[in-house]
Image 1: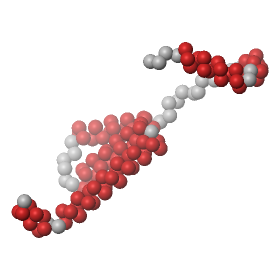
Image 2: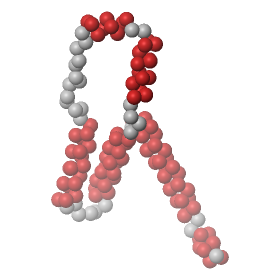
Image 3: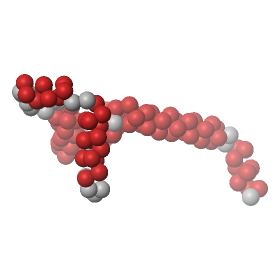
Image 4: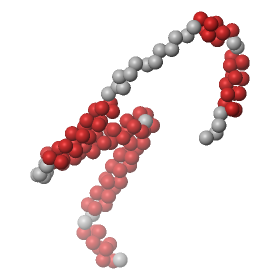
Length: 128
């Protein structure tokens, strides 16, 4: 026990690195949880995947690593998936015309009647 304590005193920067890493982990986790709360899980998954792709690309640019065709094709597939997920569906919203009879009937029914019908429908729905 005494030996490890003496070793730690020889390298005090380790404590600083551990505290910095703990703070960075906390900030990262809070960021991801905030993204989920604000934008939802799907957008957060796209953002974290894009971040990983950028980190991987930067590691190949900064450090001297061989970039093979498989790496490039994987990055292209990942980028295409993110871009396709961000594009709108392209389907127009369905337009359902309402007839004058339905509109007049809707105006004549009171809000209490509508609530009672909704409650009855809710009771008839299966639980599973």
